[in-house]
Length: 519
Image (tube, rainbow, N blue to C red; front, side, top):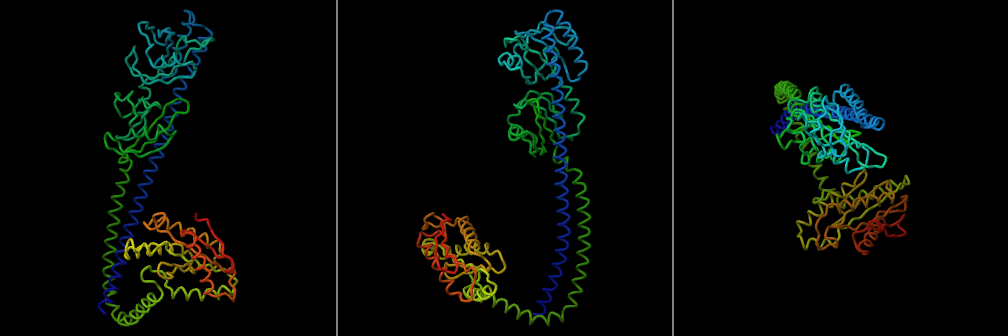
């Protein structure tokens, strides 16, 4: 016995040292993980801010180009497109292209797609743009709004360009041509090169229909490709104005933090993606160093703990001998009290505990004019349940019901008990009838949520019938037997009225009323 107690003390001391080491390591692990989450959160915020800034830049870029088109339409309306008017317009276009670095060129086409005037040094008359998407759109749509088309390769230079165009309006609404501004691919590519998104990151500029315009850190061959099957477009950008998502690439397997933002005025969006591994590279370095330091400290603590355990082992011999008899007696007393007051199957209070508690609470509450409610619960068709599923399953069913009842025991003085067989009870001191009804509904719902199969039940699952009585207030003349009988009568009424319901006995056990709120 002495050696057993001595060994227990040593084990506790050892456990303390182990827990201290584990706590030290666990705390460091938690802080390390929190630092990781902060790093990822900061990266998400930075990517979101960058996407918003780039979207604003693209919006302003196309707005400036669109402003040139609006000015051009005004000059066409004033000067016309005769030889003299075309000369003045060409000078205007040359000036605009020189002032705006994003403009590759500005063009005017007639109703057949022929070049009338542009900003280039030489007017190339051998080309016809009637097959371009922007030309077809304005020819077939009478609206005067700007149209941002898919990226195309210039027929004169062969370079990739992005287009924004407007229909040339007339008084009668007929189609007479198109004004077009082209934005150079290299303008965005060079601008995006100034942003650091890591070696595996990317900046994407695309139309709202999923057509890719520019992708920084990728080859030009991606321009004009469709993003329809890309997760960032399919699941996010096509559905929301802005947002952030962590996605694993189906092409290279790299997990990236993707932030996207749509332009305010034009049907395009910008996505900024940074590789999660690159974001966490500095964090990993710090985590490795900190982990090594914590493991060293844990080793020192373990060594000191070992010395402490040895000292404890030499000092507690006499203490163990004195305690052994008392501890054994206390353990036996606790075990006997547990057996005497609790049900062995469900762990709830037994009938003896129930009766004792009720006999104590009624006089106590009568002195302070307090309320007392009693709930009786009976498992519906339980005998049939045992016949169908067997007594072992029946015991499991009672355990599940007991757990649900115990979960409704919210206050220290509440008592959940097994009343007998498949019947359970809840004693609720200082609880009025309305509160008891509310708790009963909660209990019934929790049992229903367990969905315990019962082929003999009307709904196919285990249900309960519940009776409730309440003393409001408790009087000196009240007694436990009358309260139990009244509650049992309410329970009987619930089973008589079809089971799976709640019946209530009103104040001071005089009137019984039906509660159909469970249906």
